[in-house]
Length: 364
Image (cartoon, rainbow, N blue to C red; front, side, top):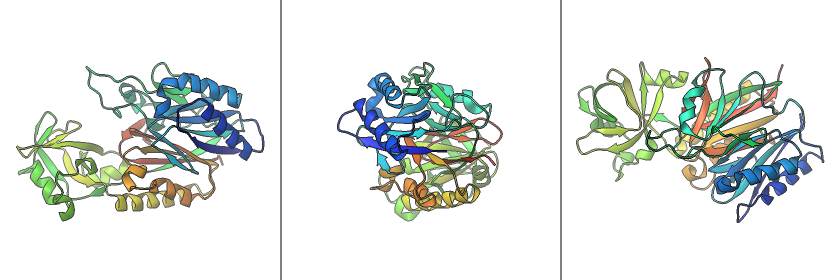
């Protein structure tokens, strides 16, 4: 297989950036003609996505193009999250990318209310790029973020593509440090978690936090989550059965408002995301992936916009870990609001503040 990528950024979002990216990728291919392409555009291209996609079709001379508008884009060359940018991956062989096939499809969601449709069927992977990351009010459904396959914008806000003839392996970095043993949910009202065991929820959270985090005012709720499971949260988390629920507010009545409802009888513990722990976890995840798939053809990365350079401060250490695990491997990625992680039994679950790394190898 022959695969190449390019990453081009500019001052303005112009379709001509696609021409530059395709030309750079084709130069790496020695002038070979691409049969298919993955194309990710930064969010500045939202209003001109259709025009830009037409330009990509002309530049590549193929209609087998899948992709999405994302909050940022990356390749093995680097990342861009703060200005207009185009990331492209070109495939020269027939088994690179196709609109249909068997195996695990790449799924791209541009609107949150379609995500439940992907909880069944084959295991699938990809990203959600909707403004609310999969959460929405029935009274306010945001417009779909542009996603596409076969060089056409998806009218229903979702697009899929397959990689025939290739074996896909993956791993995910949740970036979570569990802080306390699980406790039983005993008091809930709507989205407000009132008590765990005999303790107010906020009191239980504060007792679990490291001293340096506990003393911060206000509490860094964006770094904290509730890990909810029917059994032990740590085991459920490892098996992909736990729910990772963002914390929205710490209330005066010592309750905590969660982004999703929990039910009495569930087990809850707290998770903390900090750069050092997340970096180590991503490195470990990539080491495990490399053992399963030592010589892939290319890689894909779907990262939360809450990770990457905004999380680490100056660089995307998750992308660096991917590159270090596979030096020279063509990689393309996108930063979104949700990561669609395969369920072994079928479908996908959506995570947030996580990084999904996928590599494609020759079957057999």
